[in-house]
Amino acid sequence: MTWWLRTRRPALLAIVTAGFWAVALAVGNSSLPLPQLGGATSADVPLILFAPLAPAIALNTCYGTPASVETTAVRRVAALDTLLAVTVLAATLLITAPVAAGWINGADASIAEMTVRNLACYTGLALIGRTALGNHASTIVPTLLALIVSIFGYGPEQTAHWWAWPAATASDVLSWAGSTVLLIIGLYCTARRDFPRRA
Image (tube, rainbow, N blue to C red; front, side):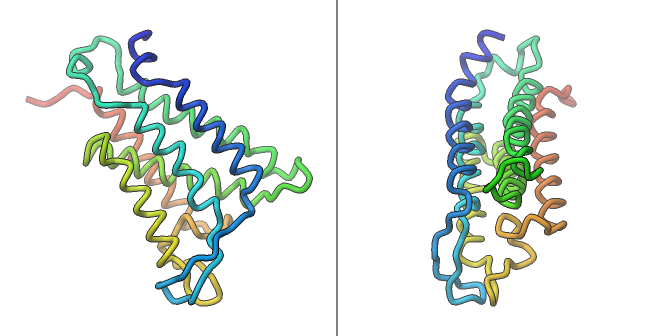
C-alpha cells in the first residue's frame, strides 16, 4: 500500500483537485468569447468547459507508467486505481452538492451540476484513453474533446449541438447519460487490469 501511495502521488492529485474546486466555485460563471465554426459566429464559452480537465489529466498523470511489477503484485493495484478515480469524483460531488442544492446564496446551481457532469465525462475519456493509448497520450482525448466542443459545439443562438455534451445545459439528459456511460466504461477499463488473463 505504501508503494502504491508513493507511485500514485495522491498529494499532487489532491492539490490539483482542490485548485479545480476553487476555480469552479469562484469563477464558474465566467466565459471566454471564442469564434465558432459549428453554426454560430461566436459564442461565450463557459470556463467550466475547460476547468474539469485539470483533475482528469492530473489523475492520469498521477497513475504514471505502470511498472512491470504491478502485473505480478498480490494487491489488486487496478482496484486501487479505480477507487482513486471514484474518490476524486465523489469528493467533487460532495463539494458541489450544497451549491447544486441551492444552500449557498449567490452560487449558480447549474454551474455546480455542469462541473460534476463534465468531470465525469473527461475522467471517463481519460481512463478509456489510458487503456487504448497508454498513460502519456491518454490526456489528449479529453483535451481534444474540450477544444472541439469550444470551437464547433455551438449552433445558432449559442445553443450547444446534441453531441457537445460538455457545453450542454445542466438539464440536458443526453449529456448526463453520455458522460455517465463514458465514466462507467473508463472505470471498467481500469478495473479490468486485475481480471485474470486468458491464455
